[in-house]
Length: 404
Image (cartoon, rainbow, N blue to C red; front, top):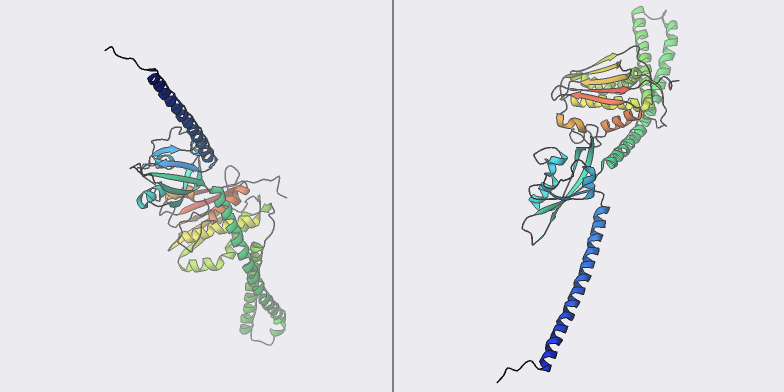
Protein backbone atom coordinates (compact mmCIF):
# COMPACT_ATOMS: atom_id res chain seq x y z
CA UNK A 1 0.00 0.00 0.00
CA UNK A 2 1.25 3.52 -0.72
CA UNK A 3 2.44 5.51 2.34
CA UNK A 4 -0.20 7.68 3.77
CA UNK A 5 0.75 11.32 4.53
CA UNK A 6 -0.14 13.17 7.75
CA UNK A 7 -3.76 13.78 8.20
CA UNK A 8 -5.29 17.16 8.83
CA UNK A 9 -5.65 16.32 12.49
CA UNK A 10 -1.87 15.53 12.67
CA UNK A 11 -0.93 18.81 11.01
CA UNK A 12 -3.13 20.77 13.35
CA UNK A 13 -1.53 18.98 16.36
CA UNK A 14 2.01 19.81 15.19
CA UNK A 15 1.19 23.47 14.63
CA UNK A 16 -0.56 23.63 17.98
CA UNK A 17 2.55 22.23 19.68
CA UNK A 18 4.77 24.78 17.94
CA UNK A 19 2.44 27.58 18.96
CA UNK A 20 2.54 26.43 22.61
CA UNK A 21 6.34 26.19 22.51
CA UNK A 22 6.71 29.71 21.14
CA UNK A 23 4.26 31.10 23.68
CA UNK A 24 6.19 29.41 26.51
CA UNK A 25 9.47 30.70 25.05
CA UNK A 26 8.06 34.23 24.87
CA UNK A 27 6.96 34.05 28.50
CA UNK A 28 10.42 32.80 29.51
CA UNK A 29 12.06 35.66 27.62
CA UNK A 30 9.78 38.20 29.30
CA UNK A 31 10.57 36.72 32.72
CA UNK A 32 14.30 36.89 31.97
CA UNK A 33 13.92 40.52 30.86
CA UNK A 34 12.14 41.36 34.12
CA UNK A 35 14.81 39.53 36.15
CA UNK A 36 17.56 41.34 34.22
CA UNK A 37 15.85 44.70 34.84
CA UNK A 38 15.55 43.96 38.55
CA UNK A 39 19.16 42.79 38.67
CA UNK A 40 20.36 45.95 36.93
CA UNK A 41 18.30 48.05 39.33
CA UNK A 42 19.77 46.16 42.26
CA UNK A 43 23.30 46.68 40.90
CA UNK A 44 22.64 50.40 40.54
CA UNK A 45 21.37 50.57 44.12
CA UNK A 46 24.44 48.69 45.39
CA UNK A 47 26.71 50.95 43.32
CA UNK A 48 24.96 54.03 44.75
CA UNK A 49 25.44 52.67 48.27
CA UNK A 50 29.13 51.96 47.62
CA UNK A 51 29.60 55.41 46.08
CA UNK A 52 28.05 56.92 49.21
CA UNK A 53 30.68 55.29 51.45
CA UNK A 54 33.34 57.87 52.26
CA UNK A 55 35.79 55.34 53.72
CA UNK A 56 38.54 53.56 51.82
CA UNK A 57 37.28 50.07 51.00
CA UNK A 58 39.31 47.10 49.81
CA UNK A 59 38.84 43.37 49.28
CA UNK A 60 42.01 41.44 50.10
CA UNK A 61 43.11 37.88 49.42
CA UNK A 62 44.77 35.67 52.02
CA UNK A 63 48.24 36.98 51.07
CA UNK A 64 46.99 40.60 51.52
CA UNK A 65 46.82 41.29 47.79
CA UNK A 66 44.20 43.78 46.66
CA UNK A 67 41.37 42.23 44.64
CA UNK A 68 39.10 45.27 44.31
CA UNK A 69 38.77 48.81 45.67
CA UNK A 70 36.17 51.58 45.73
CA UNK A 71 36.32 55.08 44.26
CA UNK A 72 37.57 56.62 47.54
CA UNK A 73 40.70 54.45 47.34
CA UNK A 74 41.37 55.66 43.81
CA UNK A 75 40.85 59.28 44.87
CA UNK A 76 43.24 58.82 47.80
CA UNK A 77 45.93 57.18 45.66
CA UNK A 78 45.63 58.79 42.20
CA UNK A 79 49.24 57.82 41.46
CA UNK A 80 48.20 54.13 41.65
CA UNK A 81 45.52 53.75 38.96
CA UNK A 82 45.66 49.93 38.95
CA UNK A 83 46.05 48.74 42.57
CA UNK A 84 44.57 45.31 41.89
CA UNK A 85 47.20 42.63 42.41
CA UNK A 86 49.42 44.83 44.61
CA UNK A 87 50.08 44.15 48.28
CA UNK A 88 48.14 46.37 50.69
CA UNK A 89 51.18 47.23 52.83
CA UNK A 90 53.19 48.19 49.75
CA UNK A 91 50.75 51.01 49.03
CA UNK A 92 50.11 52.22 52.59
CA UNK A 93 53.52 51.65 54.19
CA UNK A 94 55.88 51.24 51.25
CA UNK A 95 57.11 48.05 52.90
CA UNK A 96 57.31 44.45 51.73
CA UNK A 97 56.34 43.18 55.17
CA UNK A 98 52.82 43.37 56.62
CA UNK A 99 52.12 46.03 59.24
CA UNK A 100 52.76 44.86 62.85
CA UNK A 101 49.13 45.33 63.93
CA UNK A 102 47.40 44.57 60.64
CA UNK A 103 43.68 43.95 61.27
CA UNK A 104 43.36 41.99 58.01
CA UNK A 105 45.99 39.47 59.14
CA UNK A 106 44.29 39.19 62.52
CA UNK A 107 40.92 38.67 60.84
CA UNK A 108 42.34 35.89 58.65
CA UNK A 109 43.85 34.24 61.72
CA UNK A 110 40.78 34.46 63.97
CA UNK A 111 37.93 34.54 61.48
CA UNK A 112 36.40 37.45 63.42
CA UNK A 113 35.94 41.16 62.82
CA UNK A 114 39.10 42.99 63.90
CA UNK A 115 39.68 46.71 64.52
CA UNK A 116 42.85 48.74 64.74
CA UNK A 117 44.07 52.35 64.58
CA UNK A 118 47.23 53.32 62.71
CA UNK A 119 48.99 56.32 61.18
CA UNK A 120 50.09 56.27 57.52
CA UNK A 121 51.92 58.94 55.56
CA UNK A 122 49.71 59.73 52.56
CA UNK A 123 50.18 62.66 50.23
CA UNK A 124 53.07 64.02 52.27
CA UNK A 125 51.17 64.20 55.56
CA UNK A 126 50.45 61.79 58.39
CA UNK A 127 46.90 60.50 58.34
CA UNK A 128 45.33 58.52 61.17
CA UNK A 129 42.92 55.74 60.18
CA UNK A 130 40.46 53.61 62.06
CA UNK A 131 40.43 50.23 60.29
CA UNK A 132 37.87 47.43 60.35
CA UNK A 133 38.58 44.05 58.74
CA UNK A 134 35.69 41.65 58.25
CA UNK A 135 35.82 38.13 56.72
CA UNK A 136 33.74 37.55 53.57
CA UNK A 137 32.06 34.19 54.04
CA UNK A 138 31.19 32.49 50.72
CA UNK A 139 30.38 28.77 50.96
CA UNK A 140 30.84 28.33 47.20
CA UNK A 141 34.36 29.83 47.21
CA UNK A 142 37.16 27.84 48.91
CA UNK A 143 39.52 30.85 49.11
CA UNK A 144 38.89 33.31 51.93
CA UNK A 145 38.69 37.06 51.36
CA UNK A 146 38.69 40.02 53.75
CA UNK A 147 36.75 43.26 53.43
CA UNK A 148 38.69 46.20 54.90
CA UNK A 149 37.35 49.69 55.67
CA UNK A 150 39.74 52.53 56.52
CA UNK A 151 38.26 55.77 57.87
CA UNK A 152 40.28 58.98 58.13
CA UNK A 153 39.94 60.19 61.75
CA UNK A 154 42.82 62.70 61.77
CA UNK A 155 40.65 65.78 62.22
CA UNK A 156 38.43 64.01 64.73
CA UNK A 157 41.48 63.02 66.80
CA UNK A 158 42.86 66.54 66.56
CA UNK A 159 39.63 68.05 67.89
CA UNK A 160 39.47 65.37 70.56
CA UNK A 161 43.02 66.21 71.64
CA UNK A 162 42.19 69.91 71.84
CA UNK A 163 39.11 69.10 73.91
CA UNK A 164 41.11 66.92 76.33
CA UNK A 165 43.82 69.56 76.60
CA UNK A 166 41.30 72.34 77.23
CA UNK A 167 39.50 70.22 79.82
CA UNK A 168 42.78 69.32 81.53
CA UNK A 169 43.99 72.92 81.59
CA UNK A 170 40.64 74.13 82.94
CA UNK A 171 40.81 71.58 85.78
CA UNK A 172 44.44 72.39 86.55
CA UNK A 173 43.65 76.10 86.43
CA UNK A 174 40.80 75.74 88.89
CA UNK A 175 42.92 73.68 91.31
CA UNK A 176 45.95 75.96 90.92
CA UNK A 177 43.86 79.05 91.57
CA UNK A 178 42.46 77.58 94.77
CA UNK A 179 45.88 76.45 96.00
CA UNK A 180 47.47 79.79 95.09
CA UNK A 181 44.86 81.76 97.02
CA UNK A 182 45.14 79.46 100.03
CA UNK A 183 48.93 79.90 100.02
CA UNK A 184 48.74 83.63 99.35
CA UNK A 185 46.65 84.41 102.45
CA UNK A 186 49.09 83.09 105.13
CA UNK A 187 52.00 84.28 102.97
CA UNK A 188 50.67 87.83 103.13
CA UNK A 189 50.46 87.60 106.92
CA UNK A 190 54.03 86.27 107.20
CA UNK A 191 55.32 89.00 104.91
CA UNK A 192 53.47 91.68 106.90
CA UNK A 193 54.83 90.53 110.26
CA UNK A 194 58.35 90.20 108.82
CA UNK A 195 58.13 93.74 107.45
CA UNK A 196 56.99 94.90 110.91
CA UNK A 197 60.01 93.23 112.47
CA UNK A 198 62.31 94.92 109.94
CA UNK A 199 60.92 98.35 110.85
CA UNK A 200 61.56 97.67 114.56
CA UNK A 201 65.16 96.54 114.09
CA UNK A 202 66.72 100.04 114.57
CA UNK A 203 65.11 100.27 118.01
CA UNK A 204 66.60 96.91 119.01
CA UNK A 205 70.20 97.55 117.94
CA UNK A 206 71.12 99.33 121.20
CA UNK A 207 69.48 96.67 123.38
CA UNK A 208 70.76 93.48 121.70
CA UNK A 209 74.26 92.13 121.32
CA UNK A 210 75.79 92.87 117.90
CA UNK A 211 76.23 89.19 116.95
CA UNK A 212 72.64 88.38 117.88
CA UNK A 213 71.47 91.51 116.05
CA UNK A 214 73.28 90.42 112.88
CA UNK A 215 71.57 87.04 113.02
CA UNK A 216 68.15 88.65 113.54
CA UNK A 217 68.67 91.04 110.63
CA UNK A 218 69.81 88.16 108.44
CA UNK A 219 66.79 86.07 109.45
CA UNK A 220 64.35 88.89 108.73
CA UNK A 221 65.97 89.66 105.35
CA UNK A 222 65.83 85.97 104.44
CA UNK A 223 62.14 85.73 105.40
CA UNK A 224 61.28 88.82 103.32
CA UNK A 225 63.30 87.60 100.33
CA UNK A 226 61.72 84.13 100.37
CA UNK A 227 58.25 85.65 100.82
CA UNK A 228 58.80 87.80 97.74
CA UNK A 229 59.93 84.73 95.81
CA UNK A 230 56.84 82.81 96.92
CA UNK A 231 54.65 85.74 95.90
CA UNK A 232 56.28 85.73 92.46
CA UNK A 233 55.59 82.00 92.13
CA UNK A 234 51.97 82.43 93.21
CA UNK A 235 51.50 85.33 90.78
CA UNK A 236 53.00 83.29 87.94
CA UNK A 237 50.80 80.32 88.84
CA UNK A 238 47.67 82.48 88.87
CA UNK A 239 48.61 84.07 85.54
CA UNK A 240 49.31 80.69 83.97
CA UNK A 241 46.09 79.08 85.21
CA UNK A 242 43.72 81.98 84.59
CA UNK A 243 41.22 81.44 81.78
CA UNK A 244 41.25 84.39 79.43
CA UNK A 245 40.90 85.34 75.83
CA UNK A 246 43.90 84.99 73.54
CA UNK A 247 45.68 88.34 73.31
CA UNK A 248 48.65 88.81 70.99
CA UNK A 249 51.25 91.29 72.20
CA UNK A 250 54.99 91.69 72.56
CA UNK A 251 56.44 88.64 74.36
CA UNK A 252 59.96 88.03 75.63
CA UNK A 253 61.05 84.41 75.23
CA UNK A 254 63.63 84.91 77.97
CA UNK A 255 60.86 85.95 80.38
CA UNK A 256 58.83 82.93 79.28
CA UNK A 257 61.77 80.66 80.16
CA UNK A 258 62.21 82.29 83.59
CA UNK A 259 58.49 82.08 84.47
CA UNK A 260 58.23 78.45 83.37
CA UNK A 261 61.25 77.46 85.42
CA UNK A 262 59.63 79.08 88.45
CA UNK A 263 56.62 76.80 88.02
CA UNK A 264 58.85 73.73 87.75
CA UNK A 265 61.38 74.79 90.39
CA UNK A 266 60.34 72.12 92.90
CA UNK A 267 60.25 69.37 90.27
CA UNK A 268 63.60 70.45 88.87
CA UNK A 269 65.09 70.48 92.35
CA UNK A 270 64.07 66.85 92.85
CA UNK A 271 65.58 65.92 89.49
CA UNK A 272 68.75 67.85 90.36
CA UNK A 273 69.22 65.51 93.29
CA UNK A 274 69.17 62.70 90.69
CA UNK A 275 72.14 64.42 89.00
CA UNK A 276 70.15 66.13 86.25
CA UNK A 277 71.53 69.58 85.54
CA UNK A 278 69.66 72.42 83.86
CA UNK A 279 71.71 75.00 81.97
CA UNK A 280 70.42 78.18 80.34
CA UNK A 281 72.06 80.03 77.47
CA UNK A 282 69.77 83.00 76.85
CA UNK A 283 70.51 85.70 74.30
CA UNK A 284 70.57 89.09 76.05
CA UNK A 285 69.47 91.23 73.10
CA UNK A 286 66.76 88.85 71.89
CA UNK A 287 63.99 90.62 69.93
CA UNK A 288 60.43 90.41 71.17
CA UNK A 289 57.96 88.19 69.34
CA UNK A 290 54.31 88.88 68.62
CA UNK A 291 52.20 86.26 70.35
CA UNK A 292 50.13 85.13 73.32
CA UNK A 293 52.36 84.79 76.38
CA UNK A 294 50.11 82.24 78.07
CA UNK A 295 50.17 79.88 75.07
CA UNK A 296 53.93 80.26 74.52
CA UNK A 297 54.47 79.38 78.20
CA UNK A 298 52.38 76.28 77.63
CA UNK A 299 54.68 75.26 74.75
CA UNK A 300 57.77 75.83 76.91
CA UNK A 301 56.23 73.87 79.78
CA UNK A 302 55.39 70.86 77.59
CA UNK A 303 58.85 70.78 75.98
CA UNK A 304 60.58 71.01 79.36
CA UNK A 305 58.43 68.28 80.93
CA UNK A 306 59.08 66.02 77.92
CA UNK A 307 62.81 66.63 78.26
CA UNK A 308 62.73 65.64 81.95
CA UNK A 309 60.66 62.54 81.20
CA UNK A 310 63.14 61.46 78.51
CA UNK A 311 66.00 61.27 81.06
CA UNK A 312 65.87 58.14 83.19
CA UNK A 313 69.08 58.67 85.18
CA UNK A 314 71.78 61.33 85.32
CA UNK A 315 71.69 63.80 82.46
CA UNK A 316 71.40 67.40 81.39
CA UNK A 317 68.88 69.83 79.91
CA UNK A 318 70.05 72.88 77.97
CA UNK A 319 67.63 75.75 77.28
CA UNK A 320 68.77 78.20 74.61
CA UNK A 321 67.31 81.33 73.03
CA UNK A 322 68.84 82.91 69.94
CA UNK A 323 68.01 84.65 66.67
CA UNK A 324 68.49 82.68 63.47
CA UNK A 325 70.17 83.96 60.34
CA UNK A 326 66.71 84.28 58.76
CA UNK A 327 65.61 86.61 61.56
CA UNK A 328 63.37 84.20 63.46
CA UNK A 329 63.49 84.19 67.25
CA UNK A 330 64.26 80.66 68.42
CA UNK A 331 63.86 78.69 71.62
CA UNK A 332 65.47 75.27 71.89
CA UNK A 333 65.25 72.60 74.60
CA UNK A 334 67.93 69.93 74.43
CA UNK A 335 68.08 66.82 76.58
CA UNK A 336 70.51 63.94 76.94
CA UNK A 337 67.75 61.34 77.24
CA UNK A 338 66.92 58.15 75.40
CA UNK A 339 66.33 59.83 72.04
CA UNK A 340 63.56 59.18 69.50
CA UNK A 341 63.47 56.14 67.16
CA UNK A 342 63.51 56.99 63.45
CA UNK A 343 60.15 55.30 62.86
CA UNK A 344 58.50 57.65 65.40
CA UNK A 345 59.86 60.94 64.07
CA UNK A 346 56.96 61.51 61.64
CA UNK A 347 54.37 60.74 64.33
CA UNK A 348 55.61 62.89 67.22
CA UNK A 349 53.09 65.68 66.76
CA UNK A 350 50.09 63.44 66.03
CA UNK A 351 47.28 63.54 68.61
CA UNK A 352 47.35 60.64 71.11
CA UNK A 353 50.66 59.28 69.84
CA UNK A 354 52.95 58.61 72.80
CA UNK A 355 55.79 56.28 73.73
CA UNK A 356 55.40 56.94 77.45
CA UNK A 357 54.12 54.20 79.68
CA UNK A 358 50.54 54.22 80.89
CA UNK A 359 49.88 56.99 83.38
CA UNK A 360 52.72 59.23 82.18
CA UNK A 361 50.88 60.83 79.27
CA UNK A 362 48.20 60.40 76.61
CA UNK A 363 50.04 61.98 73.69
CA UNK A 364 48.49 65.45 73.41
CA UNK A 365 51.36 67.62 74.68
CA UNK A 366 53.39 67.86 71.47
CA UNK A 367 50.30 68.04 69.26
CA UNK A 368 49.13 71.00 71.35
CA UNK A 369 52.57 72.62 70.97
CA UNK A 370 52.39 72.21 67.20
CA UNK A 371 48.89 73.73 67.10
CA UNK A 372 49.98 76.74 69.18
CA UNK A 373 53.17 77.34 67.18
CA UNK A 374 51.29 77.14 63.87
CA UNK A 375 48.79 79.68 65.23
CA UNK A 376 51.78 81.96 65.81
CA UNK A 377 52.93 81.34 62.20
CA UNK A 378 56.01 79.53 63.48
CA UNK A 379 57.39 76.04 63.26
CA UNK A 380 58.90 73.30 65.44
CA UNK A 381 61.95 71.34 64.34
CA UNK A 382 63.27 68.24 66.08
CA UNK A 383 66.59 66.44 65.81
CA UNK A 384 67.25 63.18 67.57
CA UNK A 385 69.09 59.89 67.44
CA UNK A 386 68.29 56.87 69.60
CA UNK A 387 70.41 56.99 72.74
CA UNK A 388 71.73 60.50 72.00
CA UNK A 389 68.92 62.71 73.27
CA UNK A 390 66.74 65.16 71.35
CA UNK A 391 66.64 68.86 70.49
CA UNK A 392 63.30 70.62 70.00
CA UNK A 393 63.57 74.07 68.44
CA UNK A 394 60.66 76.51 68.24
CA UNK A 395 61.01 79.25 65.62
CA UNK A 396 58.73 82.28 65.85
CA UNK A 397 58.70 85.20 63.42
CA UNK A 398 59.43 88.77 64.50
CA UNK A 399 56.71 91.13 63.33
CA UNK A 400 57.60 94.72 64.36
CA UNK A 401 54.49 96.10 62.65
CA UNK A 402 52.25 94.30 65.16
CA UNK A 403 54.32 94.91 68.29
CA UNK A 404 53.11 97.82 70.38
